[in-house]
Image 1 (cartoon, helix red, strand yellow):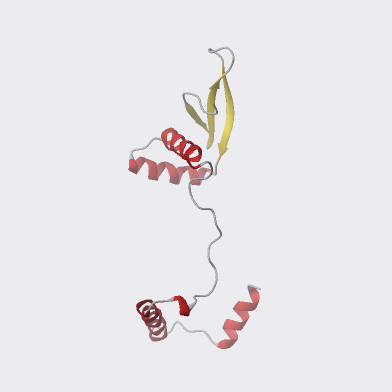
Image 2: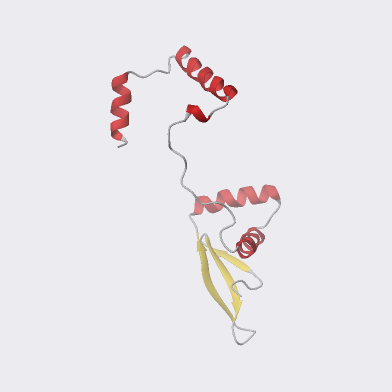
Length: 122
């Protein structure tokens, strides 16, 4: 089994402790290494939930086993333009209202600015 009885942390690296052939000898294997700021954010959220990091990792690993894979969808963010033909009338009206508000607030761009911005992203 990958995880033993405890998980220790060292320099934002998570280690799983497994027992070797001799039950008194423990081997450390690096399982996960994160950036320190990510670990801090995770610890903050988990502390608000009252869940220790080790429990959260065990929950995640158990969910991988139950789902026989990653327990959430992995996909690239949708960057396509909004397809107005797929909107309900209420959604369409809300988009028009957003556009009118931007116009009232002076949040506009010239055709030249739009063309330049578009070409930078191609």
